[in-house]
Image (tube, rainbow, N blue to C red; front, top):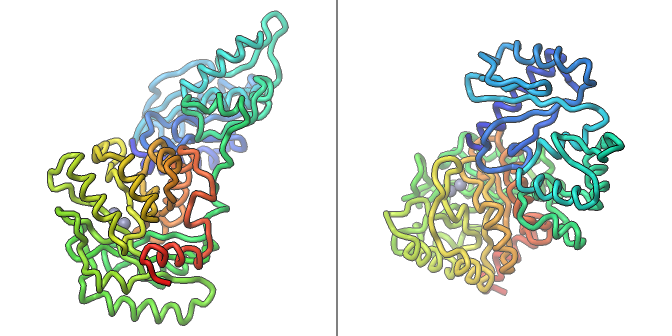
Length: 423
Ligand SMILES: [Zn+2]
Ligand SMILES: [Zn+2]
């Protein structure tokens, strides 16, 4: 299941469970959903409940209207079938709430490494509880307490992939992670001028409600692989509309951008003359043309070296839970991006989540500037898709100073101007 679908299903289940008053206060998402994995194996929730109430809560949960049948059951969990997938409710006790939360959040690899560490310290971390053999349970009400008992600082959920985070925690090298509070604007959104659902004015007012300082409207170019596109003839009229909205939106900067397609030969779908009129240019390779990895890499490289291209969006063009995307040579793309001052995007649309966390981690290691965007096509998704983008970035150990849209609009404009070679 894609993160987007899983997110919606989990939110609906949590809403109905809270409404029914079942373990209502301490109901949290756990598992791969909490870690922002791009594809979610199963939806898991955790509730903190005193043991005498466990049987009652599990029974009540399995009788809620969304549950069509019981798929599995233990003394502390129940998995129910719903119309849109299996949802498991795990229970933990108040004394072991932190240990239970770490246990059920996973990943398996991360928990295995914590268990090995506990063993070395003469304690046991098992079945969601911390125990000193011979002496009984060790109270562990928060995740911080669990990590402290293992002589570790807190490790953020998105980092728990078993891929070096424990060693970094031991060595005091955990990243200072990006969070929503750092984001000052969104550089990739669509309006009804292409395949978006809302007007520019509506998108701007949604961005203002999120407290953004700037918003880029970046509709699809003329021959883009998209249901609706912005024709070359539309660009001037779109700019006029942006000017009109700007005139009554002094508190938020509106960038007139474009998401231009990279054609089969690596050229761009709009002329240089047209592109140079935009405030920011995003380039995308939506259509592979049946090309293999090396040829796609060449197409990207030509775009990256183009002085008018500022951001490469969703570079793998993957579809989580469906397709892994292009087998491009990311190291070559990153070297060229760093050299030319081109940013690489982490696209928060659940159909992309691209760059993937691990790929993004390699990008910043190569000194590439990252942008985190919603690629939003309707106002309701603006906040949610940015949240997915940030979750994905956190999986990539991304820090705020590595992200272009944690900077002010003048810094964004300077980033564009620098590559254009203008004074
Ligand atoms: Zn796109
Ligand atoms: Zn887009």
